[in-house]
Length: 188
Image (cartoon, rainbow, N blue to C red):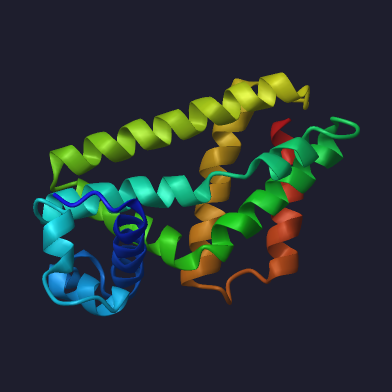
């Protein structure tokens, strides 16, 4: 398998776009090649098979969703109270919803994981690591609330993001912001 990291990342980003637009069934290597605007056969030189492509695309989504160091540092500045917590959660919802193709592709991968044990194992590890990192980061930040509050917010906010991306007319951005604030208020 080829090792050019930039090309691999571009192919995975193309796969994410195809997954979001066409679903998992619409993800042959040729669709990835076309989306990435590379010669036919390129994706098959980077990924052993379709399962490998799906698994690596799942990993790439989580890689792209990680906040940068500047964002993390900004979250640690100032008062660590309920208002700050709500502001951080609103920003997180906007960031994740802003990567629309990634989140929609992740939903497709979650459905596909019900049929593919290796993908299910990767997504389980990724989600568990994400939740654990959020709990640890929350504890270290001094923000109010406990591990259970963080886990409950994770579930609530994930569904709010699904609503915003799949049925955006259900809640306006302002309503979504208000719901985030209310969730923090009630859970913390």
